[in-house]
Amino acid sequence: MKRFLNSRLWLALVSVFFAILLFLTAASSNHKNSGSQIYSPIETYTHSLKDVPIDIKYDSEKYFISGYSYGAEVYLTSTNRIKLDSEVNSDTRSFKIVADLTKSHPGTVTVTLKVENLPSGVTATVSPDKISVTIGKKESKMFPVRGSVDAKQIANGYEISKIETGIDKVEVTSDESTIALIDHVVAKLPDDQVLDANYSSRVTLQAVSADGTILASAIDPAKANLTVGVKKITKSVPIRVEAVGVMNDGLSDIQYKLSKQTALISGSREALEAIDEIVAEVNISDVTKNTSKTVSLSSNQVSIEPSVVTVQLTTTKK
Image (cartoon, rainbow, N blue to C red):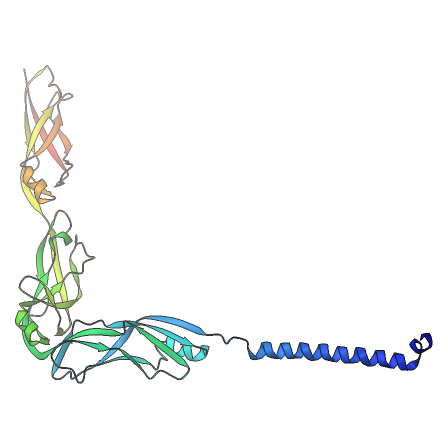
């Protein structure tokens, strides 16, 4: 037995055994690696787009549509990043959302939104998947234009001096029932404006009913130049001299003469209504002979013009 273990045959058998073992180990490892590559998951890319415009197909010569959402949210999915990025970019996008009303009749209808021209390898989900649209027979009519400024949009102490729109009438298009409700068109001062100075800018026109309700319409031209002039609320009141302090013992009387008899005050209407005069206080404690004093005019409620007056003091000795 010992001789056999030391023989060349034994060494050859052992070598073959280990060679087979190494081969099987390597083959098993390659098989596992190959399987991992075949069944590895494919990466999926997604992107959500908001306010994607809806292309509504209808007979625009015959009908006017209103009451619908102008955009929808689209959820895009693809395993091809390049294709997905191309559809995300509005400049390179090929797909569009379509609402087909070509077979619909006047009234309020619900239509399914469809995605068209979507490239292969990209899927899309639209939310909402349906919209409601009001369809009416188209009609156009001329209406007068009026400027509109809310009282809250005028700063405290100011009032409107003029409102101009630069245009008298515009053409309004809508459905027949809406045209019947329109009273006029307004050029409204933007809500974010509070005026303490003159205003002039182009604003979007809106068709409204007699009670000011905004009505769906298309207006030509769509904008007009709104000019609003404002001025301070003012009031003219007399100036009255009021002596303060103690008159010198050597004097029997002091007469006062103002350089200006009236003052122009400005402020809120409530403040102006509460003031009938402006008082000019003159301290006479140091007066011993004819003199003049400069007196400041002030008030916590209003602005005063002029802010100072000169008071001539004429004395009479005992």
